[in-house]
Amino acid sequence: MAALVTTSDFTAPALEYAQQCGIICVNGEELEAWRDGTGPSPWERVGVEA
Image (cartoon, rainbow, N blue to C red):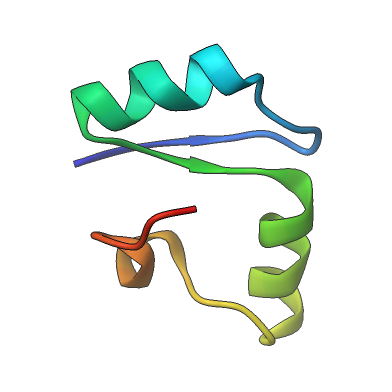
């Protein structure tokens, strides 16, 4: 499993490619929720469709 984290956002083609390759993408909003304890960690998101 690989994860790619950004404080910004991902383009649709990047998300599609990441899904094909099994890469978990965490955008800025999801990163902030994880930090605040209101969202799941990347490893808890495995198998979750965005």
